[in-house]
Amino acid sequence: MLGVDPGMANVGLAVVAMQGRRPTLAWATTVVTPRDLPDPARLEQIHGAVRAAIARHRPVAVALERVAWNVNKQSALAVARATGVILLAAAQAEIPVEEYGPLEVKMAVTGQGNADKAQVRAALGKLQGLGDLPSSPDAADAAAVALCHLTQSRLRRAARAVGAG
Image: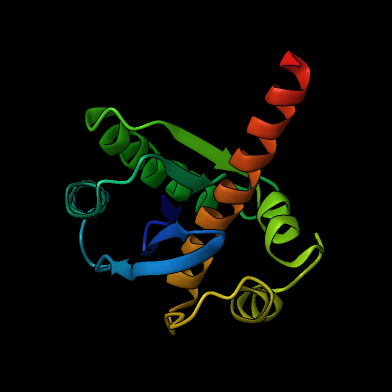
């Protein structure tokens, strides 16, 4: 599972896999685009980094944090642009994408929708058992998004099984 915390300046990427019933953090990084580059060049860097992560780790899906439009509209527009090139990279690799809102991610990781970044990071290690968390908050957020998808996809499969039975 490739988790992505999108942004224009910083994009968190993390690969989380299940080993038995335990999630493990296989890889994480933060892609930093120089602020002095024009937006098209920054978007090209983001696209290239996501394509490279997909080629290297071959995830079965991409989990993406949804843009929060209730914050700064200018910032949200930049994140939406970055999200577009991330979606393009996944589509080019024919990998399904699921998007999750910040509240969904916090609930899946901590059990609380109002958790702050520090609580999410602590829960990734203590509650979820992910070791070697990256120091970058963007990469840690990407791991949280990937973990959210892993838990949500299991719940969705279970719900389908109950509905079919």
